[in-house]
Image 1: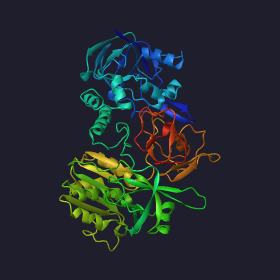
Image 2: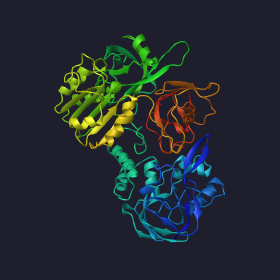
Image 3: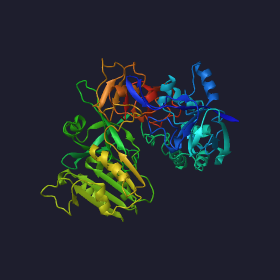
Length: 588
């Protein structure tokens, strides 16, 4: 008979870590006597990061004394106490390779249901004093698991654990954990896992993404879409290749387009609508190259590519392209990249943009027009005035060729010569309130791109609106928002070279941030270098498990330590556990 050995609780606290402060509830300690287990946690317990931990489906974390013994032997330690792994219940029995998702157990007065494996993050390593612990828990098939509280009640150490129901499909915690995190992802096992009602919504979403990938046609995106949106089609070529500028067109006062072709005249590889190109410009004078990314705005499948660029007042790369590049010049480009691409299907499509954000959604409009789509398509665009309205005639012509197209233009500050009802529909900024007045349909697939202020406000407002989009997908120019779970006092700073003498190692270019610095071997990973430069990064496990840090590797190669549990998509890199083998360009 399985037994509850200890009930462990702990409130979140601030802990010093690598010169920063982490707010975490991973420190748990055993308590004596009965404790009330409630729907969201145990009395006296709490979680510091409610995004990654806690909630109805992660109310109580369980770990086994047998795994304690295993790790004591593996790590050569004898200093463990109950709560060592951040768990609420330390139990004798209930091994991860026998307990199944959906199993139900009675402990004391309370009734529980198994919902998912532990989601490993760096904080279990912080608690254990073993930075690689997150990866070890997965690779050694000993993650532990969460319980949902079906009936609240008192529990205490010494209570027997009685199994009262078996989960459908009989898939163990270890099997489900392996299915998401380890290579392989068998299609039949993915389908089987999705037939378990008790599996938490987050894990259902991840495993559904893996199943969709498994059922897609050959040649579709690689990597693990269950863990990251960075998974995408393999890049069409490695590193940078020369492309010739064959046309330069003014699209508005500040926006211009470059049409690009292979110097030998051969067709360029197909690029899905919504992707971007990265260019490397030789600045001269011994300065590092300027590396920047620009969305493709032309029709997918064309023999040539088109990128569109907004000249920023102090933009070194955009000014270089506008003032120094001429037709016939040859520039170096990395292959098309990006997961902000048009999904197939029958849902209505909302193409919502402002300013230069029109470029990737214009490519999507080209794709819809080329296939003569019968989907309901909405083109919603905001500009300052007519002089700053790129692609006005081009987008109007494309929409006129679609059977169910709608167009609405907003000018925030119309010029005297701009005609309401002709050049634009509404004076003022594009807003979600206006969408409701336009009659935009519910259940649409929405694609949003625009300047920072627009992207801070519009996606969240749309997702929370009565329009209830089927999905909201976004593209952000420049560095994306950081993900630094648990860190307190994090502020956004301009990117900069790291403190101290410049590194003398390979050049590391952060393309979206416009920064190139020398590598210094004192950093353990590319992630640590990026953090030293205040380049916005996303991470959680820091050991090659969660893939939150997965980023595009535009050129160059890396060495891993430790090796990722599951490799990233082709052309991508996990920056948390990699170091450059030579010069690299990262999509960060």
